[in-house]
Image 1 (cartoon, rainbow, N blue to C red):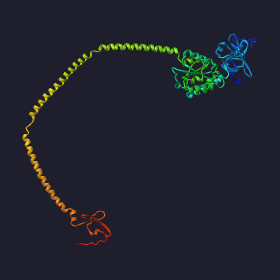
Image 2 (image 1 turned 180 degrees about the vertical axis):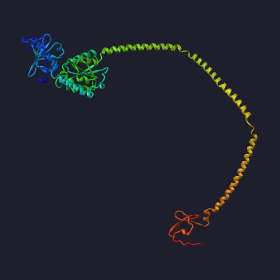
Image 3 (image 1 turned 90 degrees about the vertical axis):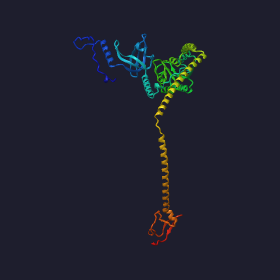
Image 4 (image 1 turned 90 degrees about the horizontal axis):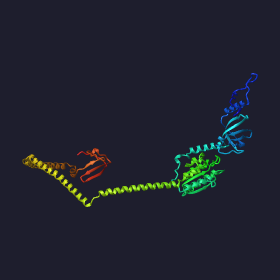
Length: 464
């Protein structure tokens, strides 16, 4: 912070200032001055991050760390007490570039300005963490970490693949765990370095190889614990995409329980440690055997219960079973009774209906009138009607013959047969006068035996 940006210094007010002998301003003791400066520094500078190089590092018998933090132009003393140092995660060495989260204070007994360190990390870790968050956010937006896309682990894996270094202690832990829990499961190792330059690409290549071979049911990507730099290969985008594109489910077991990498989010399941990854990949054989024994016992009990129930059913049915001859005789008796009921049910209504029909017939015979005279009258009227109809039909036929003869006399055809003709123009209009004829015109002359088209050369009207 620039000097002109600092807040104004608070006034130093010792608890019991020594009065001056001549009545002037109070005189401060050295202790009071150092205490006031220490309070002023602590109020002015809250917890801040400071970057520098370790020098003169000393680890005291009490567990406290004492060192100088320097750069090219200056240095400052620093102390990190045991209660904070035990959570550092690494032991600083001479020349290490570090970043410390510190409170600026003053060691009052000596009057030395120093840093009271609360947390320490290797220089660049802050940038790595920022890169971690940036990549995590990017891949999360792409849906690479979508929970709905996570695949379930196979219930009975027959072959488990492991992507790790052959020299890694994590591999021995995983193999020991699998041998103890599931000795029947085959293990395929896809060797690759797990840290160092180019290791991320080689890890991704090993995952792609396992995916292309498709010889395993589940794949473990694991390594032991370490600093964030040691685990950084598993924070690379190429590894995350290889895990997401793998053909089989992937379990990530990288570092310790508190370590999280991008590979953990891309995998189908995250295990806190490599050993835990092995435990998740294969259920213990003893657990399966115990489960099978329980199922066998349940099946045996169910079978015995079913046999007992069937035996009781057979006993009950045997008590109900009767002699076939007796059963047939019983059914015959029932059939005879049903026949008797059926005969009675049909005969009684039929007798009743016949009696009713006879009564109605008798009543009808008494109610019918005598139609003999009426029938004779109807027959006589029918004869008279037939005679009158025949006489009228004869008269009508004679009248029709007379009209037909008259029609024959007046028929145009009979007139044409006597030598006459009908003259008509092209439109079929009959001509009655020579004045209607015109020279060089055509007319149609209809005769008794047909018609002819005639051309008129000249017209000379003549009245005879």
